[in-house]
Image (cartoon, rainbow, N blue to C red; front, side):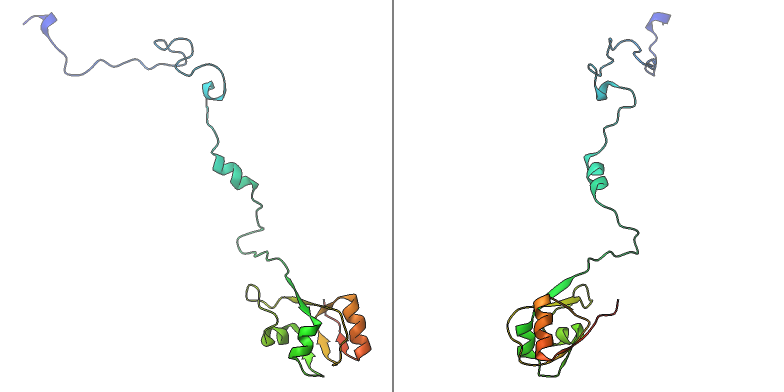
Amino acid sequence: MQAHNIKSNSKNKTKKRVGRGGKRGTYSGRGTKGQKARSGRRIRPQVRDTLKKIPKKKGYRVKNMPVQIVAVNIRDIERRFDSGAEITPRALVASGLVHKAWAKIPEVKILGSGEIKKNFVFKGCIFSKKVEEALQKSGSRIIPKKE
């Protein structure tokens, strides 16, 4: 056996290329110019951009639920309740005219037009101007909402 007949068991290590490094030509396999040709190239995921556009809440414990105002027609109240009844948002939920939102009783605004023949006691409701005038003419009492 002679020296030129000896074969090695392991392959020769290739030298690490730095920068252009040789064996790759001028652009090192990156094409020409642009974001992908630069060092440290990293394209931001599109999902991140859409996440950043979504408005953030104050914290994970805070539930910013919008204040919901439900409109109720005075005609429906007159049909469902007897004269002299106390009408509150809770009473309207019990009668089925108003439904709870997010397990809470919403604010109630009473709307409508026409004559009111019965007189009621209203507590904790908001009124349109026409309804408020009509209620005062009919002799109904309005107890203002505490804020």
